[in-house]
Image 1 (tube, helix red, strand yellow):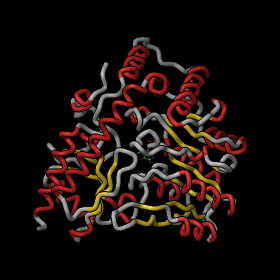
Image 2: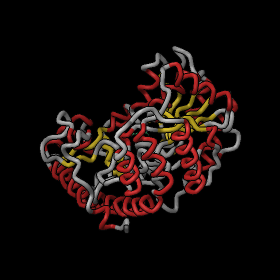
Image 3: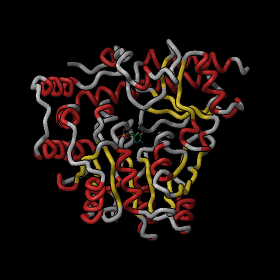
Image 4: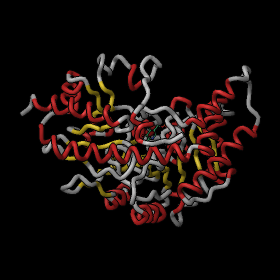
Length: 393
Ligand SMILES: Cc1ncc(COP(=O)(O)O)c(C=O)c1O
């Protein structure tokens, strides 16, 4: 099968499948275009579809043996070696229900109640929740943006947070929502700081596979001295659009941290993976490369189309450079509207974005655009945004 423009242009009708993005009536007005929740409006790779169908044909879904998970771990290692040049061993991998589970576990493992956890903000909303719902405090380190809307790691701010007592850094690599692909230099400086203050790093690398040339993704575990203090969280869920199956992995080179995370899993009684998630994840990692290459090339086209659209039609809007992820960060502060007002206007014009404040207070006046959809859908949604903003001119 060819995973070309026509394949991804076709998209898939997801309505009526209880999918949050299209079917959540509290958020989506009838006939609105959803450019919000971070999953994609494409069918998954045929290899995944076939593997799941094949497994479903045997109508008994009892407990899985250890090999089911071991095969998945092997496939994950081979995928990360092939795609990112990172050498992992199956015994360094811990299967989790999802990445957010890993964020919560790391908060509990590395900090005590009342401690603070440092993170670059604005950042994916559940980062805050993982800290606060476990009785810890967020130490927000605002990212710095230049006049073009390009964000930089605020290392001086992180140093201050560590000086003030934070002993855990929650990193989003690449960064959702500002679409930054952290460089080896930035990550090396961050690990050096962590080393200096004896802090741990949990690096959420769920968006690692969405990187646009000439950019290169740098895993935290490839950085010198990260081995004893870093946990990488990764998944096939975003990459292959199977998030509803719920599976992710924590990887660390430290045996001590590995034992700690396993103890967390035992403490909450998670003893094994889900049959369909294991099946789909293994198939994705083993046989999904062609589909993924086609997808990245299509998303690159969407990225360019979005940039052209904003330059031509929305001169007052600043679009952060899109280095990674399928999420774009729009700065609409020149309109003087709050996120709530922006979202309300957009909804009335039949398009839904994620409001910037989901990512923290610095997101006020911003919207996040999900461009993981057919290009025609993306551009139709953006036209509706223009119409909504015309009311302001
Ligand atoms: C940075 C980031 N981490 C984690 C998640 C959610 O991952 P999971 O569904 O595996 O918990 C998302 C989903 O949007 C995300 O963007």
